[in-house]
Length: 120
Image (tube, rainbow, N blue to C red; front, side):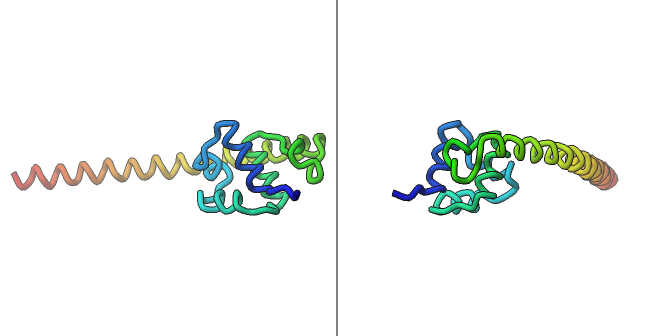
């Protein structure tokens, strides 16, 4: 009997207590994509690898024909270190725009209060 890759991945994800929303956020895809992955009998190895990396799970035991234990760990470490570098830079940019937005909202609120006070 042929393995159903999507079902195996889904079982591992749920067994380890990860939510679909969490996986989607970490993999930077929408939830519908995750559900579509679960329905695929032959999931692409790069998708399985991506899921394993974001959840820090080694799928080499479930898919020995796709990943060797050493290979997955080496690639996973490389992926994680690259993701951390990108994540740090992305977080700085996100914080900048968040702070700018909050400042703009505060100034808008002050302007509204001035308008209300002037009409009183």
